[in-house]
Image (tube, rainbow, N blue to C red):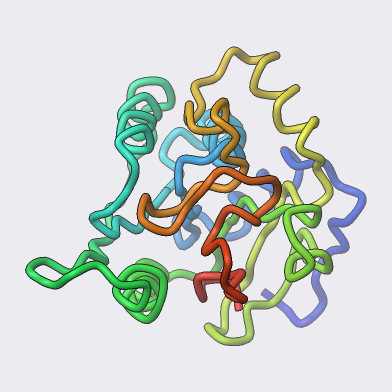
Length: 207
């Protein structure tokens, strides 16, 4: 891609994804943690590119509900999902094992040999994401990063899910707006349920 990039801020999510696929597929991957935002992205991608590449980082301590949602994704969208193992077999669970370097290392493996990736980041999720653009340069990795849902509200996400009768993680119905690993996630609005009681707000994938 040239240093002159298109301004996608006024483009809809489907348009952003279509551009990402047209420009970068198959060297494009979409991060999938089986939250409601990925429900929307997986559905859009299944219509744009049935062979789109998704990946999930499996820390080994995911909620049972997340594992069940994973199965429903495979059944409904028929998209290939690459599994990146970031677990720590034989070691006690700690945040450093799950939400630290092990997870970041998993992301680096997932994005090796890619030119761009897609995330479900939305600006209203947290102050650390408030400036996210629909297309930005991931300078840390030297690739492009697409955030098609950057300007979507929580209501926008749910409207899309219900209009298309899509599967979603049932933990959202139990007050979990953001869903990570079972040991460090509590119910809460935005990302306040992640690492509750600590200053930590991001796992390292988007910083």
